Picture 1 (cartoon, rainbow, N blue to C red):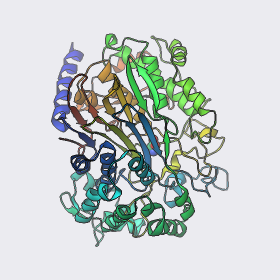
Picture 2: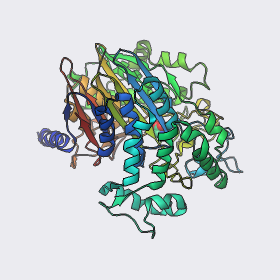
Picture 3: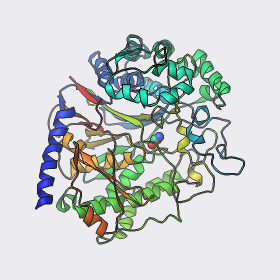
Length: 567
Ligand code: GLY
């Protein structure tokens, strides 16, 4: 009885929290949901000026590079999934690649062991940035606006400055030791006298405004050729990095067919490799479709057990099989198998309702992936839907800035398996599909996803969070489809994560500042190793209710700065 009462109180708090913090924001014509209100406004401004969702997505991404520097970026990479008004669907892959001089053992010391953190630190950890090539491909193939137009909001935000939110001011101050190691970064994130910014102070970025102006005038070539490319390559040379002007000039974003799944009649469109997101998501949905989830009850012990066992199996497949499709020629056949209903049936038969399985560390383990990434969703009046997840890998990436360019570089090389052949319980993985090779894309978990019903986009969803991204997106879809929650409640609901190894079930400890009443004792009785963790993901989602006009946008209440904007 006490448990039920606590659950009722927490559920009421959680619904109020969802509604208070970030929505739902209704709109009839278009909607943008992102990690910062000024970035959502930038996208909205382009929609209102006659741009489509693709133009608005590019403008939002550029604005996030100004106002959300932890993950918004020019110096990183990501993925875009598009569902167009005419029914076509596609994806753009602008994941970073390894420079030509990169080698499989480049982060190993003389003793043949990984030099701790070397694959995540400084200029040697930087992959060739893909964001601007991806945005360029999006604009050329699907946009109606020019580079000159979509850059306008970002140039203005960088040049005129923005008032720092408390969260941003706090992050800049927390990282001051990193900034002091790189004067070009210190020039951005600290004041000229070396002190830290306070919340509410105006924060201007003149170097970034200059770089954005080059994009405004020259588009893609303003980044991959000319002064920006030369300054980036020079910084690499000065600081032991590998990227050359040739690496930059030859970088290409790739258009790929989306991964498609069908979940109880809802069409799932998500990202294929080099993301593991779409594959694992569809594999899990296929297993769960074989069960009546609503009859089990949301976040009941039997539901959480089934979800955990499903995650365990999909993440084992992820670690074993997935990497860059260009470097793994049989991967498309493997992905087709992993996302088939037959594979789901086989895996489902191995799930015992009365006991947790044991993840086998003798087989495989996998590399660290940072939770710091950002997702945004955009829809326009014509019904074009665009979801983008892009990243610098760690929060603020490699925490280095090339002199005079004003933007941070990624440390995405850390998403490769660093030590060939060495797979162990500490978290190292050395399997071949995701080893470093020149030109190869590192495996990702980013899962921008669009759900369609009768050909119409009805849910746009994605999140940051490293490997937790896939499970976060999964749970928002289940909350919406199986448990029929309204969008804000579906986004705010407490989440869990299991990733095969380490063999632990991580439950969000708090929701709306209250302890979540998880059925922990029952889960432990089934054999799960349970750990309470912090907030999981920050979802930016848009919903269209079937048969109704207009959209609802919901920004995750876990992110104090996030906001939806619609008109
Ligand atoms: N760097 C995070 C990811 O790609 O999943």
